[in-house]
Image 1 (cartoon, rainbow, N blue to C red):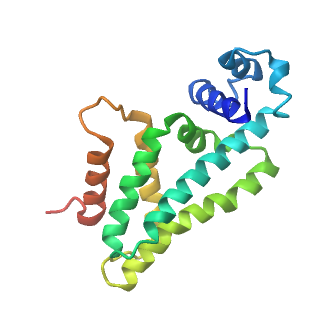
Image 2: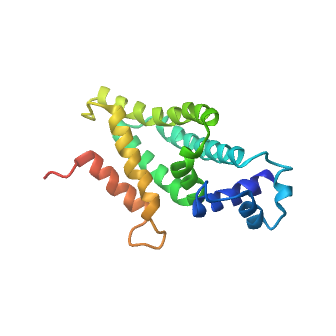
Length: 186
């Protein structure tokens, strides 16, 4: 059993039971080990949660940064970022669900450590919106609000998306991008 095994099991348990509903015994059971064995690798459930949030944000930040740094017009870049983000969410649903829905369970000290990393991730999106405004591709009065709105729409997708549903995650991403770029008006 490795630390990665523990994190993988914990992500699954936290996704299904929630952080507060899950116990170290639940994580141990998912690994088919004794609870005491977990404490050889981790000190607490908080430590596991923080490690999961770090893992998820590192993965997402690396992926989105690789797209946002491309020499593309801002609208094309944003479309690819939306596709990339939703794809990573769907492909890593246990881990990303913990990031999106359990971050509020961090204690104050760990929350303070987590927020700058989250802000760095959000800045990637804001920078692309600002780039689009500067190049006159986007008309966006408040990039902070636009990022929050876009994140809200995309993050909520994880609650209803099914890989075998009517639409692929790529189709959903393209429809979201079209909605952002063209709105609802004729």
